[in-house]
Length: 391
Image (cartoon, rainbow, N blue to C red; front, side, top):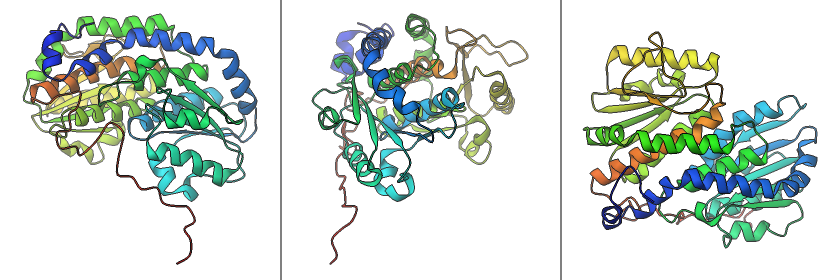
């Protein structure tokens, strides 16, 4: 399997073989994940439907780092799907917030479904969040979406009465440092588990394959430019996707290329000062006709001001009024596809860009942190007891 026409032996020599393979395999992985969720449909329905029928149900989507951004991508779409049900709430709260502030994140007496996203299932915060939810809420239900059969999270929740583990195919369990297949795999698995409206999986996979086939020259040209800052902008659930895209650049370049994420409206309120002549801006255009007006307002403004290079990612070719430019990336999805469908496909472009930036800097993408400052599974976290004994 090749990526962007790059030589496989060269990628292996430069420490990028796993990252490249795991980016390139995503169209096939999504089909495998879809097949798995479809095969588990009866068990998922038996677990989820009684919970979704509960009045005042609170759904908390949680994870750490990239896994937290999965929840941020899903929350707006899931809330819209369940919005007609009285009292139902959907919130994305990182495990890192739950662990350090359980009293401010968890509500006793409120029926809660904690949806945990975890590549390995061994993150200290992922495990502690589950235990804190049980200790604080009593009757908390758990849906774990994870990629590692031998992970602690899957083993702990596998036989609990109020829990369901959705274990994804082994190929989603990235061997590289950065989450790529695992992120999009868990995102789509949860979307299909909750039956959120998406185009057929073949349409998503074909869109990602078309992007990988069409964009090597553009990606190579972008990576050859003297870029020192990346800004990724997206509205609603695409803001969670923007955060993940920015994090991929930070991780794979070992922090040497600064990246940040925001919403198009929020970017004007201070963060816009980051722009300079060596800034690349990726603007993820919403398919929602109302939201898209605000996205396009900022796109036109940024291009008029001319600070940095701006690339729009869109499901439709921008007309002259919207601000068409040669740099814009066309995503081969229906123009009425929900924004959640854009997220995994657009992320493939950002993942490729981050890997190429890493290689340009002489960094090994499979293990980019030469100093060991960050690790594949976070280390150094001390989980303190909720009620420490009196001195």
